[in-house]
Structure formats: C-alpha cells, structure tokens
Length: 105
Image (cartoon, rainbow, N blue to C red; front, side, top):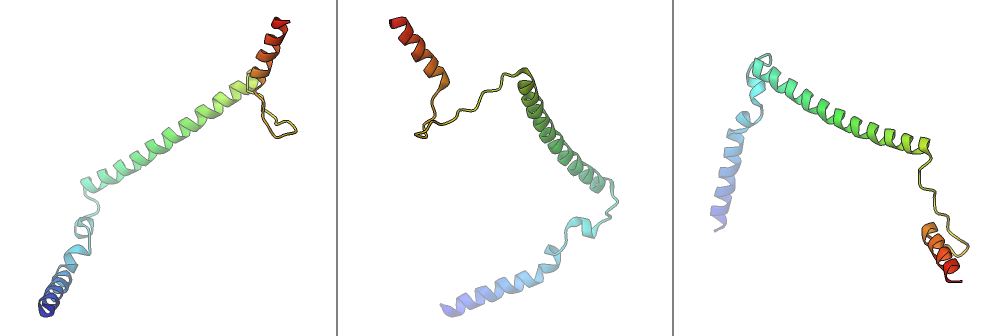
C-alpha cells in the first residue's frame, strides 16, 4: 500500500514538473502585448475602475451636500445630553408629558 502511494506522489510530482512551463506564463507573455484584444482588455479594466471611483465620489459628494444644506437651514437634530445619572431623555417625550400634565389640571 505504501508503494502505491509513493508511486502516485511521484507521478503527481513528475506531471507537475512536466507541465510547469505551460503553467508559468499567461497567454499575454506568449503573444504580442500590443494586440487589439489586449489593449481592449486594459482599457476595459481602466474604465471599470474609473466608474467605481466616480460612483464613490458621487455618493460622498451627495452626503456632503445634504449635510451642508441641513446645517445651513438649521434643521439639524440637536445632540441629546445625558443628565447627572447618565440617562438620555427624549426631548419630544418630555414636552408631550409636560403638555399632558397641563391638560389634566
């Protein structure tokens, strides 16, 4: 059984060494790198990277624009500060409970 395993491994190693030359280089290395298909592939890769950065930049610009508009109008939400016990109270809930108490009296 051990002899069969050694033979199988030896066969795999020999096959790998024999096919190493074909696996070592891509088709571009064997062909002309100035072919139209190679240039088209390079341009397609540059285009896809450009579109990705364009979309990311547009998204960031949209968020910055919305943030600036919100700050300019003064409609930004005020930060909620914790009280002495460390609890954060909802200002809307406090106003609604105060108005409910006034209505009850």
